[in-house]
Length: 338
Image (cartoon, rainbow, N blue to C red; front, top):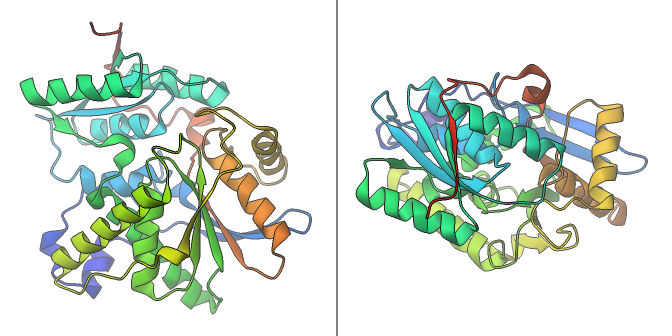
């Protein structure tokens, strides 16, 4: 579902919800079967022709009005796909991007992402997430930059995922298919899960959302995600001129088992899920988010064989081979700010 299609249902959104044309399109709904663990799979790795993944959905709204005079500023880990998406789509709109990063545990995909990010953005290294946020706050105070929140996780960014949930509802209706009992999605900053909760409520689907925690609990927890979902619902209601959808706390849970003890630390289960998909189906997963969420989805499907389980694929690995996440090569790599 596009923003324009959303506005056809709620006409006030035509003016109240501006968006950037990033090429976001409907993504396929597929069925995968892994040895007794059948899954519905929402292929949000294919949100745009160039650099897909869940971040494009949020940035479609967050980058509205971006132009050649803008400098985008965001933060993320050294292998942040969010930061890469900001730089990629910002370049398409003519803007420059600055990123303040913090260290993370490395794997092949994170190293490739970090290298690509240095090509397309001005990157400054900080020692920790807290230091990065402080540096970003100082730049926002003293310089003219356009702030893009970490992970794209704000009520406005989360509305992009609300649209995705309504798109899912339309696909199920077209196929005459029952709603999934459980939707499994990774949870970092929580914008994707929060937006999906709002969209599922708007669509009247009884689906529960299982958020797979991939960051420390202080960042990803039920209270934070549900709070963001309620603020997103309120924003939708205000802009659409409609009643805000009610968020049912009982339809959201956090899965803790896949975390692995540190952000981006791969686990045996996540490596197995990566290998299964690559060998049988082709899409590349990564060990920070998508592989851990798939491991959780497979475990849930095997433990509850009577349930319909949907896995929300958030990572686009096509650029790893095609080099699609390019944009304007104008980046630099700066040492830690003092």
